[in-house]
Length: 439
Image 1 (tube, rainbow, N blue to C red):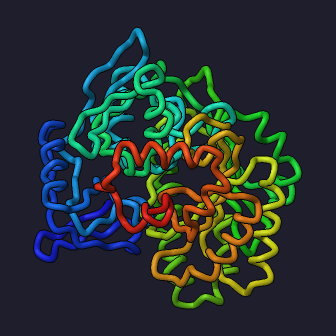
Image 2: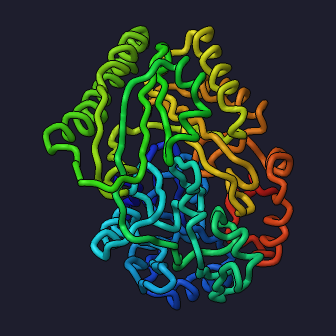
Image 3: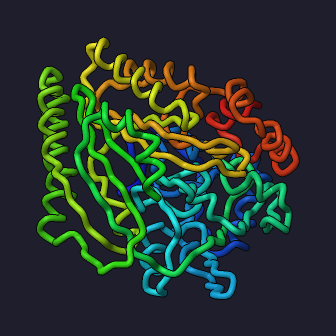
């Protein structure tokens, strides 16, 4: 799973299959020194540079026709500081390996997204997040960063060292330098009890503020063409551990969420008229369940069905109106949407280009099965999101540009000024960054 490069054609493709690029050369540095040298060499050759992780972004944020840096050799835990309760990891470490290694040490991140295939640097640089009342995105848990800047210098930053870089680089879009190591805050491993249950959409929206306030981590999935949702509440628990049984887990997570869902999407793609009926079945297939386990086993789940996705953060207070408008749009559009709409929240944070920068946020994600036409649905959804000053996820499909971002991010100018300072020659530029950050 993830992106791949075939040595023969030299074409790189992302996970969603909607972005490809042909770099001049690829480098997989085995050390920070080798990475610095590769950056300096690219500058001498007049070639742009991009690092790419597992290709889980649906935007062309990592695409380059210059030098493609692959971080797979820069992996593993550098150090654990039990006094400061931090862990420092190499940038290419997959989240899955980090989560498992931390668990063996009796440690855990506080919050995480719902998949763990990505590298730590790819996930944080694009603003990957889960859902949380008090706990925020993965990047908001960063306590220190090391990055190679355009002149090959290794720069370290934290709240006390180069704080202006730290304020921006935690979600740096790959525009400020190439991240080589990340220091995360961790805590002693804990248990979460997950409660998943169906709930009518009208009730979720009517009681949303209460559901948000009463749970540490609340999220729900609404099935278009139905009035049904599946809700998920994760809260800390004193135990005991009661993991999902192997058979039940396979039925729910693999057969229904991946296997049957994949087949249903194949049918829906071939015969769009069947989608509403399939949606009604899907919304009923996932029954209520409760289980207790360590965080990464509760927060994350496998996602094997390929899709494309758009996600916007709107002010949390605007969520209910935004979702009602989205439902009205789908109902009157004649669109056939086979993927549920995912809704999560995050508290305001202090990172310049975080989707939750300076405001309590709610996230609405719309998906389409890979290979089905998504433009009409996403364009209509985006019109609704932007009317609420929505901020798109940096790694998911959107059509916004620098002019728009200057209006919805109060600290946009702070970020671009720092970029002018750290990368005046635009070594880390690509078409995507040209659009979202300006030339």
